[in-house]
Length: 178
Image (cartoon, rainbow, N blue to C red):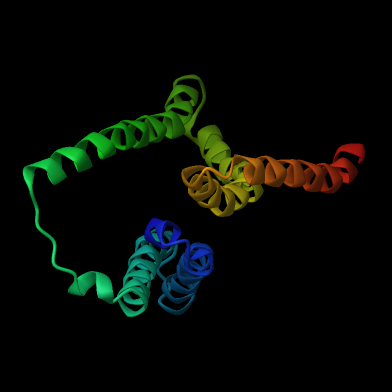
């Protein structure tokens, strides 16, 4: 999915997550409804939907950007060193994010029963839906800002940020007033 963001193909980037959720839902219907697997079917639906979405994304990537597979690359020590130096901070952040996402459940489990923690785990994803709008804006905005910054068009970046602030203010004021 992130590869499509790197290619600035926002349609595919945004569609993959929707398709993954749809495939998980359809797999749950098959496993729970048709095959009568109950809770095991629901548990199997998540990896099945994820695998199917990954295969579909890879197929779209190969079809849309087939020239990548045809390119000849030379792996050198300098390339490996550069990639590792670039990827190491991302790896650390990814690891820390995973710990931070699950530490709350572990701490709550020390003070409450598993049943109550289960309720928390059900409610937690609902609160994460608040992240969709900012993440969607960042997915579109940040690659463009990076490209404009690289070109030295700082005035255009400032104008765009000003426009987005006005736009978000107009959209959010009615929700704040309610």
